[in-house]
Length: 473
Image (cartoon, rainbow, N blue to C red; front, side):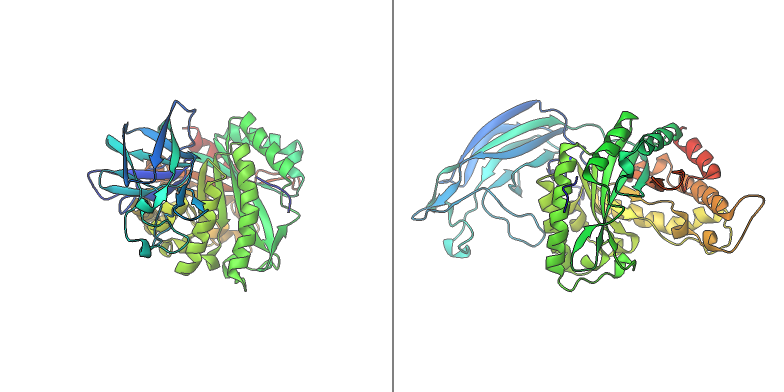
């Protein structure tokens, strides 16, 4: 495998936890807001946390509007009479006991995780806490009563000002037709044309093939070098860049119906591939990384979702930008708010609802048809506090049937372009700037690089005018 790709109910105190700008835990029943990639470090502080007492008061006050990154830099707690020493690790997976080192912020106990990032909404003293309890409550893989321990943890805390929340992004999915397409000049021409239309971001898909047992790169999986070149080309034209790690069935069947015979082994293989790309995404300072797109069969049960969360927590230790799982729209009813706040910085979703089966629907009824689905998206934001990244929209075959009808011409235009025109008009009316409160990015799909004549498709002539008008207002 080639290497590839850098909340809330009202309470008296709210605590945010992210891993290198990725939200993984929230101390209240729900979360709110999101974190951008960290800005350059402004200050650092070093604390020693001894093992032989439960509380270490630091006198250090955490302030609002600052991200604090916590690093384990030295030491480990050893149990008396044993050689084994333990780092200050813990768990924040829903339902899993957290242990070892905690932060005590007022009445909130926060499990320590190396490289986590924390912010608070009121001034709060930083206190380190080692859990008390009877030693028989712990199995051999957990620390016993703190009084039986010796040693200390060295913890470094780095301060970063929180950048302001960005508005609604105007993005496009830029897909390669061949493994080498993004190494050619075409990618530069495409991103230049997109920037001229008013786009401010691109999402670069990295598709892998699978048979449900293993996975491998296909003919359209970009080579790592070409992926990096496309990333640089987009940045040269002022566009921010996201990568989307995706799977496609080798038999061309629906990915949503994929049923791996050994789910654990399959997810382990996917995780290995994702971690490789996450490392490269971190080194290339990619702004957004989407993983696991549309793995419906691996999110159906609580056990499946727990395994997927473990994968994402592993990605957070390698990738420092915004991380998301891109779900199919039907998964929104299954994935709990705690799933999103544990795995992701944003809620990725393919809003592929069918809005109309009319031969040539007008934009007005499409706007009306969007209403209940927009409310579903808004409820997801309210439940999680994470803004949404919409991907592959308004891909007209997913929203209307007109492109599939046997029509040759309508008023001198091919039906494809008329469908685009009405679908785009409805999309921009529904997801205009007013949607920026709950939508962070909208990646219109798709533009193909390296295909015949490298057309800006499906941004046809009519749709292109509407996109330009909407993005340049």
